[in-house]
Image 1: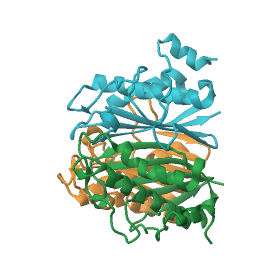
Image 2: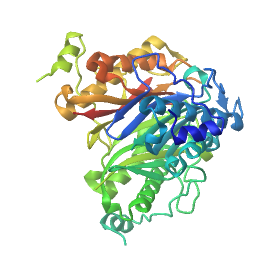
Image 3: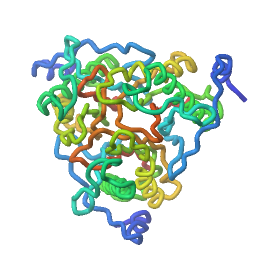
Length: 155
Length: 155
Length: 155
């Protein structure tokens, strides 16, 4: 059953995809105490295709990067749903770590990462406001443009 | 009112700046249980100017990088003060994550990051000794030379 | 005395090295509540030599990178043993953060990082399955090919 948060997303046309399954000896999420740690999520769309591929500042636009960051956030939500069954069980988005595939000198990582941050606030309201670190990295798995990891507090 | 830790910093000539306000849907800090998670801080000086801009190993010296890392640490303290009102409420600096804007092949990230680590021990003594991860990244917001994030335990 | 986990490693021919001592104002691990945070570990072998140096996608092979990641994981275990005295006190490997020294366009970070993930599952079984974030960075301390940090839950 979908809770309040998921219904809000559905009303906005945002469907939660089937969460990506890791292909190795790790898992998508681990709970420790009230913390839920989610593995870095790539910018897959619901069909499993990367929303943006390559580097910001070298072909990928800020707008496409922000869409990619939003896709990462949607995938974080999909993992949360898989972990908890209901997104309403999230007490707080604690932290997002944003890794932007960047050409040297690309300075607009935060504008890209806003795609992820905005989605969290859309989904959770004030509980969605999080601490955040955004950095530009040299390379990402599958040449994804963006990867986002998350730490959440469970009610 | 300034506590013991802040007085020590003042005696050393280190004033806490007004903490930087995020310009998007995230916040400078989130508390969960006894943990306080602080967003990545750039190397702004108290006037809001970057202490060092560009890449280590490509124009920015190790000495200037260390000053930049210290500025990031001062900004972490400013956020702690905003979060808790008094730095004496910190029980332990748990972890610092240091991101050094680096040209490929720059191997001295730890020397740069010491600027941040040393300030934590100056401020908090043994409680300031932390776990640390230092990596060289391809790009940082605003072309800052250094970004540092932190995890703290509150008394 | 070696516990069950360490005996298993010994049977596999994996000896825990003397843990690396930080050379600055930070420490290899900090415990907060039930969490144990371990500083980023470089890919030193038991003799203190880097298992692989330089960049993936530019000289270092995926196979050598995976060996380097495994060495980082062994060094994490050595720090856990130093912190707790007995690896059997680990309730769960919560999270690994993998930083792969990467040439732009290197897309196989996860294959490299599997060297670390596999070792955790070898050592701890299902308790070794962790959340994970893998990114390609521009530079690492001492030009190490891989650095891995960890978060663990203590029983």
